[in-house]
Length: 67
Image (cartoon, rainbow, N blue to C red; front, top):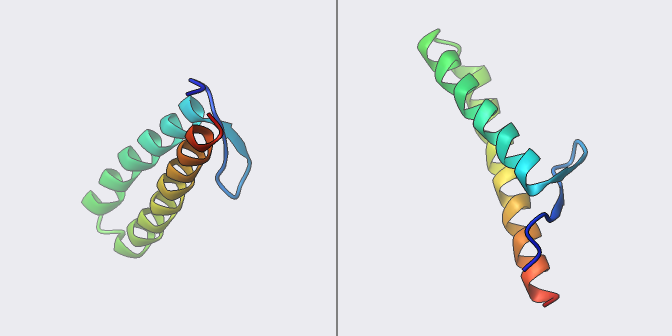
């Protein structure tokens, strides 16, 4: 399996490491939003994280299928 796959998260093309870093940042922001009572923004961010994770999963799956 290629160690550095490319994934399109809908906002741009990321390698797997870059997308994972973005997801980590989103999770940190999610905690801050929830602590500040900004639940609508937190829910929106959860949806964005879910899409990024699904695209990362698809990218990994399609990369392993090509082996």
